[in-house]
Structure formats: structure tokens, C-alpha cells
Length: 355
Image 1 (tube, rainbow, N blue to C red):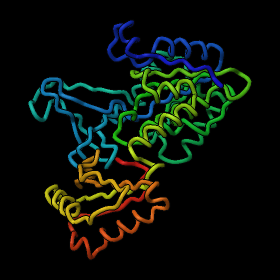
Image 2: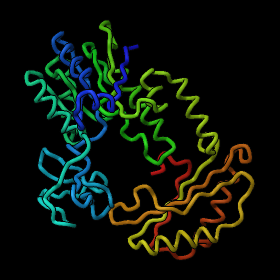
Image 3: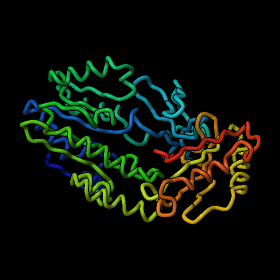
Image 4: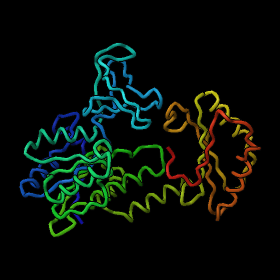
């Protein structure tokens, strides 16, 4: 296993006095050492673009996608604002706030383009390549970049989760995770699991052959159980923590689950159909829990408003999921629902994502 260092970025900020510390002094030093030794580096930042948020410093408004209610990501390459959900592109960057007309607009957060720019300034002699869905428009580019990396024509490889697993290069002796906290607090019971997987998989890229490897994990939440377990590469400990949390909250694998999504172009109709559907639900059974209706985390995507109901059926009371299946069949038949043509109703059994 590689040697893993966990860097507290809050402490780093206090020591350096820099508010937006991108790369810690430890990671910078380790990159210098690896380049001097003619070895290679992989850096993971699971967010593409340059900065994920553009905000007015005077009134606080955030530049959002009108179709999705999500922040528009600033892309320095191509100079544009882009919605990473519906792919809307605004080719003109605003020079003043649409709400208060202030010119005090600022960028917040870190994307792969920003990491790339910082490294090009810090290591001008190094050959640096970035791999994310902005650069990889087809398999040819990805294949060509990985071939160059294998031939040591590239010194530092930056990327999103695309580079976190499956790569096996003899001279990669350092892996850096720029912001391990990305995605940690999404309202999804699998959020911690996904973060753990990503860090664990990325760490496995370092020192896979004869040369020893090191991993630098940067976090603003170094005491978070997910970050602690990932930085110690303790799979069994995290497994126990995750199972305990899920058992307390009746999530999978202790319950059968279903997510029912209501979506439509009118927020009023979506709300009324979800409320009426919930009121008409027949009485449940022992072991069934119903949450909602409530707006989805991404409450609007592609001009469609979204609400959801969550059903959890305890496996102690419903060992094969048949009770939940029959309950859903009874309550979500076309006859039971009636006409809801303007509102789409979708059932997702044992959903992979709650977002």
C-alpha cells in the first residue's frame, strides 16, 4: 500500500494566510520531488471547468441556469458559463450583476481548469495534461493521452473521476486528491460511499510496481469519518460505519426502496399531483415508511420541476420485497392515478441515486 498523508486545509490556510489555497505546501513539495526524480504524478479534482460558482459580492446572487436552478460553471477555456446538467451555454460572461447591476462579480470553487492553470504557472517545465469530459470528446483523445503518459511524455495528469481507477503506470509514485470533500454532503445516503470509493480508487494508482508510492489527500473536513477511513485505506472500518448509519435510518441494504418522481413544466401542477397522489395512498403495512412529497435536491432540470416520494420497506417485515411491489402496483396503476398528462410520474425501484 502507498503511504498516505492527510492535509488539513483549514490549518494550511491559517499557516499560509492564503484564503484560497489550491495546493498545500506538502503536495507542492512532493510534486517537485517526483519531477526531479523523473517520476510521474496524478492529481484528482472531481469537478470540471474553472470555477463552479460565479457570485455577486454586493447582493450575493449566484449566476444560475434558468432551466435547472443550478449554478453555472465558469469555463476559462472557451470563456463561457455552462450548465453541467442541461448543457446550456452562455458564451458571454456578464460584466455586471443582473439583480443589482454591481460589477463586483467573483468566482468561487475549484475546477480542473483552475488546477491545470496553477500547475502550469508553478511547474513551467513540466508536461501537463488534463482529462475530463471537456477534453475527452471521443475515445481517441483519451487513448492518445494515456499512451503519451505511458511513454512518459506527460509528467502530471490532472482529471476528474475518469482517472481514478483502471490506470496502471510504473512511474506514477504520487497521487494527490485536491479536494476530498467534493460531493461529501450531497443529500444522498450513498454520498459518503461514493467519496470513499473515489479516494480509495485514486490512491491505488500510486506505487503499483517496484517504486514506493505516496498519496496526499487535501480536506477541509479531516475528522469526517469518510475522509478518515479513506485516508487510512481502511475499507472494513468504513463498511461498518456505513452499515450502522443505514440500519439506523432504514436505508438499503436493510430496506427495499422506491423513489417516485413527479415532474412537469408547471410547479403548481407538480405540487398538486404529488400532494393528491400522497393523500390517495392506501394504508400501508408494518415496516413501510413513506417520506415526502418534497422537492428533489435538483428541484428543476431542463425546465421541469421535480418532487419525490420515498418508500422504504423493512426487509424484516418484507424479506423478498413482494409487499412493497404489491403496494406500489396497487397505488400507482393508471386507473388509480387517473389523468396526469402534464405531470410525468416515474418509479425508480431500489434507486442508485436519490438526487
